[in-house]
Image (tube, rainbow over all chains, first blue to last red; front, side, top):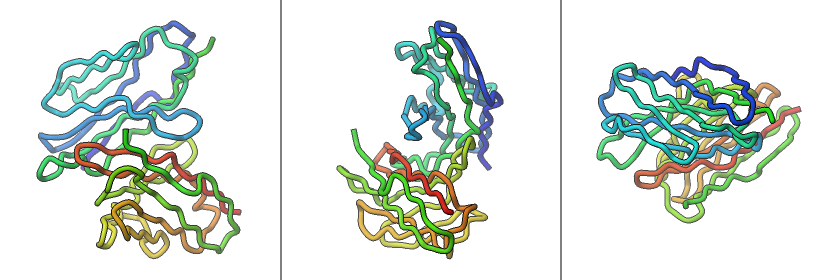
Length: 119
Length: 113
C-alpha cells in the first residue's frame, strides 16, 4: 500500500525566511510519480510539480526548489525568501504509473502542512 | 491549460435530502475521473474512481449506495450524496485525467444542516 507522510503539521515563519516542507513516501512500485500541490484558503488545488521515480534531479522554479532522494524516499520542498502569499496548505502526493504509461491513476495524499508566513 | 469545473461551488441542504455535484472537463475528454473528500484541516481522501460507461470503483469504506457516481459522458461525472447527514458535510473535489495529465476541479463545499 502507498503512504505519504508529511510530519510537519504546521509551520510558521517570518517573511523572507527560507522554509522546507518535508515529505516521505512508501510504495512497493518501482515506477511512480510524486507531486506537490498548494491549497490556498479558496480550496482549489494548485499544481506545483510532478516528478517521476526515475528522475532524481533536483528542480528549481523561481523561489521554489525540490529535493528528491530515492535512497531516503523523500521529496522535500523548499521555498526561498518566503512571502505572505505563500501562506497555504501544501500537500505532497504519490501515484503509481498505470499500465501503458498514459495515466497517473489515483493519488495518495499526505496529511498536508499548513504554512503561515507572517509579514 | 485544461480546465475542470464543479457545480455547485457551495451547497447547503437539510438532513435527509440528496445533493448532486457535477464535475465537467471543459476542453478535453476524460474517460477517468476521481472523486476526493476533504474534511476541515484534513487531507484529501479518494472516494472513488469514475469510469465513463462503466460502474465506478469505490475505495474501501466508502458506501456506494450513499455516494452514487455516474459518468455518463466523456466530459461529465456526477456525485450524488443520498440522504445526506451532517457528517457528510465536507469539501468534495474531483479530478479529470487526460493523457499524462490530471486536473483538479475547484471543489464543492457541502454543508448538511
